[in-house]
Length: 326
Image (cartoon, rainbow, N blue to C red):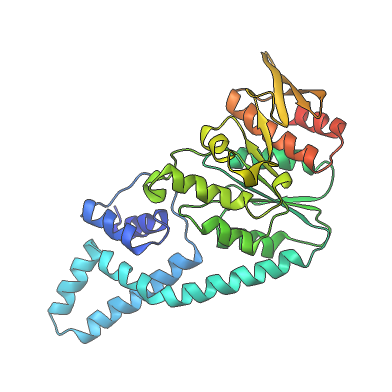
C-alpha cells in the first residue's frame, strides 16, 4: 500500500483536474488502493509533480521548527493530497504554455505535408476498433499512420506526430477523445482532419459531460470542421440520427444496418463457423465482404471503416481482400 502512488494514480485518472481530485479525496479519505483497470503510467507530468512535491516536503522540513516539521511530514506521508494539489497548482501556468506550444508545433508538422490525408475518429465507444480496422484497409493501399491504443489527447497525439510522422505517409488516422465540450475542437485545431468518422454517442463519461446533449455537441465538434460530405456517421445511433435532423447535416454520409436510406446500408449479414459475411449497398451497387470477425459491435465498426475506405476512393477489391485478412 503506497499512499503517494495511489493519489498520483487517481490524479492521473481524473485528468489532473484539481476539483475532480479534491472531490475524490473528500469522498475517499485514507484510501490507499484503487482499481487497476487502467494502470498507472509514469509520465513526464507525473515526474514533474513528484519533483515539485519533493521540494515542498524539503521546504517543510527546513522552514518549520522541530518537532512540528516531522509531524507535518508524517501526516503528509499518510495523506499526500495537499502537497500534490499544491504541486498541480504551481505547474499550471507551465502546463498552459506547454499545451499552447504543443498544439502550434503539431499543427505546423501536420499541415506542412500537402499530400497527407488526416482522418479524425471519435465516438463514445467503437472509435479505437474502427480506427484499427480502417488502418488495416488503408495500409495495404498507401503508407498509413494511426495513433496507437487510446492516444487521443493533445500530448498523446503530439507524441505520435513527433516520433512517427514522415513525408512518405499518405494517411494519418487520428483518434480524438474528449471529456468536456471544446476538447475535440482543440484537437482539430492541432491536427485538422479532411475526413471524419463518428461511431456512436452514449452515456460514457456522463459524469463529466453532465448531459447527453453536451456529449452530442462535443462529438459533433469533429463533424463540424469538415465539409458535410466528408463526414461519416452511424445512423443507427439514436442521438446521432436525431442530431442529423439539423439542416447543416443534410449532406453527411451515413452507415446503417437498419435504414436502407443510409449511404452504406448493410442489406444482410450472417454468422459462419469462421467469422461473418455481409452485403453492403453503396451507390446502388452491392458489395460482399467476408471477415473473421464475430459480433454485431465488430461488424458495425467494420462497416464504418469500409464506408470511409470507399469515400477515400480505395478500390473495392482491395477493401474486400483486406477485410478478409482482419
